[in-house]
Length: 131
Length: 253
Picture: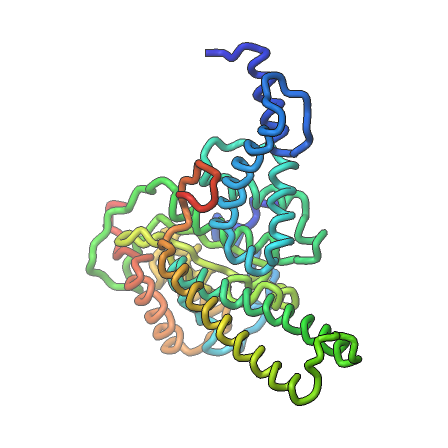
């Protein structure tokens, strides 16, 4: 089964894996060949990667939003806020967005702080966030 | 006690409805209320998956993630009676269905597995610890390893980068995941191929580092013995500090 391949059970398996990489065939890789990184505890890794992946999604959404705004430049939005007023409105919008971002970040931080080290849990009732 | 045939049939019909949402004529059901069962059961499954795979949820976004959970819930009949093992079935289901390929997220299998392994290592039964002593020589004596670890091989470096950025970085990545004997917390290390080779040989062949140094120098093309000694000393010393290596194996082992 495809799902059995990920855990390395023996040196034979790893030797096989390494032979397929360029590692063995690179005699002068230098000091980094023994490098390793401490990624931290489960909670640290998770928090870091969630932030990274959320930022990626947010950037993609922001780019989509920008593209949407370009179309608005055609004068079809009907908001009556183009020109100077529009700029002010944009600035306010920006402030608001920042504030919201701040809020959501602090909310996320709170959420993160309340998260326990482990992800394992028992959930039984099905009504929202019990357990 | 064996269930009456009719009861069993009704339970299966209700179970099928809860999973698929396809309405059927279920005897004894009050019309207009049965959907609450489906909602409640789905909430448990969705909440379990959200908690087990928060990184995948962040990477895919709410909508696509919900599709994956719905797909699993209606397409698979979960076999485990233990809810904490359900995420593994979720991973298996999507790996076997090749969902990652279908939705053009080739890293999906790796990311789901990477998130699952934390739960598995955290929750797995205790493994017997070897007898060890605190004093010894890291090169001459056999090292005693904390048995509660796994080394996982990934094709995409989802443990270090934003998932979407890993699509271009396909290769061989090794992650050491172990349970700290002091805190029970799961710890992660990103290893190079050579580190992985060293650790697996030390454990499998139960040999001292000195017996392996020649091979290491050969496969890695390291000519300076001093460099190799310093690098190994730092690596093994750090693993001792992190309690992946408990100490030195007693001679009787």
